[in-house]
Length: 333
Ligand SMILES: [Cu+2]
Image (cartoon, rainbow, N blue to C red; front, side, top):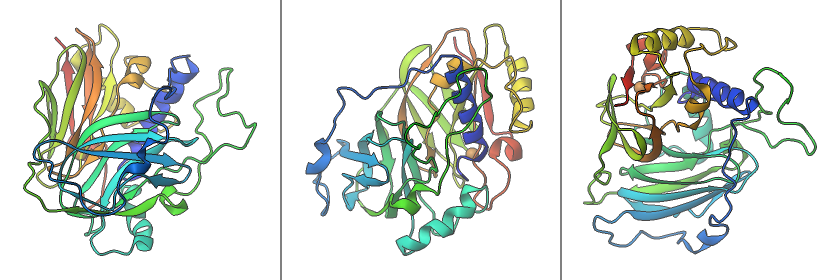
């Protein structure tokens, strides 16, 4: 996937290795909303919200969305994204201009492989990705535009009785893949109308700001809500986090990260990387300039971390880490 590409490889690798090591503690979703979003209007605009976030509840199943209205006003959204399916799903808002829905998939296919972004894809926000049974809450910005709500992930529902993990010492192994979920029905129109609402996340002490091409990191130790915003001005960015083992300083962390990023996909992760901790750090969603969302994160005092962008330029090409050295290595006080 364009906006996942190497990132998805890295993250999948981390996730699988951590799972093999017994580090899997997936949310069970118990107590979360189940069938509560049916009341969300399927037409018309949201009310006059002032500066209050507009509530937006979306449920993903295999393979459809429900709950998303057809039209909202631009601004700040308190999003609840529930995955009621059996495979991972994402909530992506992709600006499509006047492109017919059934032509969007073919138009963005090259983008998903690292190629150029189509001209119509000005605004892009992927605020949430949810594992099966997981409900994700985030506060996100959406700017004016004619969008589609889509899921571009490719995981296929496992056959009944199929083993999805190899218990004994097997290498990392991806689950069965299939066509992108938007080809299976996970695409629907979504219009964001102009408004006077400010496109600003609620004020927060913790923030990661992405720019062309670096990160500004302001975080502290402990659990916290982090505002992630892309200030561009032109390119699309995200933030993928890596934690390094105790005693690994920033110089060693940078060397290990760059070696890993330029290695073969099958190469084992470097020993400096703390896989279980990296696995529990959510990577941010993907955002075009001016957009962003909040993420619940937990950093440990004295540890060294990296935040990296693997998205390519709008004209296509290598990930920003490779083409523009877009990363920040930081040690938490
Ligand atoms: Cu980037």
